[in-house]
Image (cartoon, rainbow over all chains, first blue to last red; front, side, top):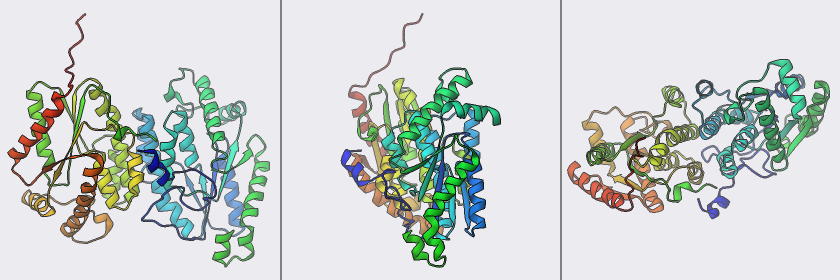
Length: 257
Length: 232
């Protein structure tokens, strides 16, 4: 690819895209105005994303919002293949990235976009940033990754649960222990899963942090209590949705918010 | 951005690919080419489009349920390609062998664009690929391709006929419409990537003669015949 063609096909990068495709997008699936909102909760393995999403969902539903959840590798099409590939040790960094991207495309077209068009709030447990971070750590070309995910929709809000490795290790060991992939054992930092986990997660956290400005992360300190984090989440989500709340019937008011 | 597909590779081996729509006769030609090269003492490896074990399950499920969108269709094929590239194509090239690929990234460029996927996006997607030493495009009119497929009583498959696009409920009509557009895309690719066009209407023997003469030019030029390391 020549450098001039890069400019014509902007990939997943930049601010001010909220609710639109990052890049050229999916030509056969144009995004006109739609009433729904896409909220992503990002963060590394074991940081507490799912707990926060559960609480946020309940709160939103009590307030009367329709909520749809979507999560990484949960597509009907790809989940069995990804599980199989992970267990059979045949993945390399490129196929790893592409399997995840296929899963994401499937969920985007079949779950996320329809839900947004139907007026739901879509809560995404992880988003493309997990893919970018994991692949980035594995040395995949960053420009290529951003072009690949140019078909993704920029969320209206991205919450990033930030944590330090030491706290993360304590939390993961307390709950379910360290697993092969979350420890980056495929990167062959050594046989010791503890050391590998620490090295790998440290790199991942650095990678996530480096994307903060590029993708307008709203960073939350994940070392605080569950309640404190949830409080902050609700405060920000509330501030974002409020204009729509006042005139719940007006689709155009929501689109402008 | 990576630019492997537009830069010559530096492996000692050779990569030759054949392209063309279904019924163009490219697979027949590739098989004859492989025979000839092997008989001449070359070590040859043949790889086919969409054949890796990795994505077989997903492709099968998706195709059976007709559940693939143009994007997931494109990405699954890219995953298959990446898997084969790293495990099946690059190692023989490093070993100085001749790799023959039945379809290559150009198939994705032609089909995915016809399905409405962004052209530049697909090109960027495949920018990790290795540029072939030679890409042969077997150009055939749609009528000839259809006649050949019908003569072989080939049952037109859902996606090959572009039925997912809903242009026609009749498989044969859909095939004509879809592959007709794919042919247009191929014509653009010939220019863009410098593919060698073979008139696929001719007899099998005539075509093969031409194929061999073209391939020969690429083998004579700086072909490195790898010799075994000394026995220890």
